[in-house]
Amino acid sequence: MRVNPTVLVSSAGLVGGFAAARYTGRRELGGVVLAGAGAWCTREWARQSPVVAAGLLTGYLGAFGASHPLAKKIGAWPSVFAVTAATAATTHAVTRKG
Image (cartoon, rainbow, N blue to C red; front, side, top):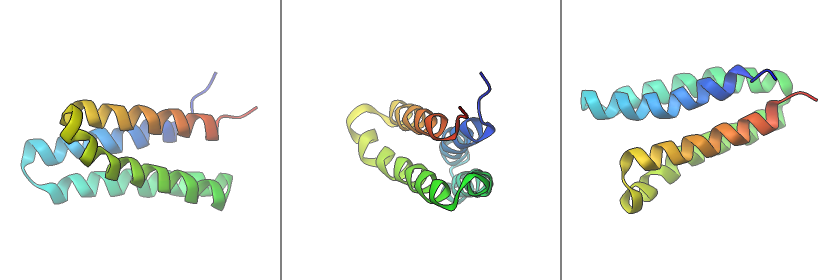
């Protein structure tokens, strides 16, 4: 079974964006990582369908937003890993072929 590369890139965007912001102390750098991965993924998803692209981008950005209040309940890294897992599973389910 082949995994669509956007599963990995979107996961890297969420985890890498958080790590970049946390370890450099520069939130905008984390935003650049998050946005770069999201932009690349959205371009790839749009090749499948604009509706797919809009839905997955909304999920990607929603995961980023949801990680903040979730972090107050379970901690920062567990929150990032939880939303990343949900995003990866959703992206895989939507982008897999046949």
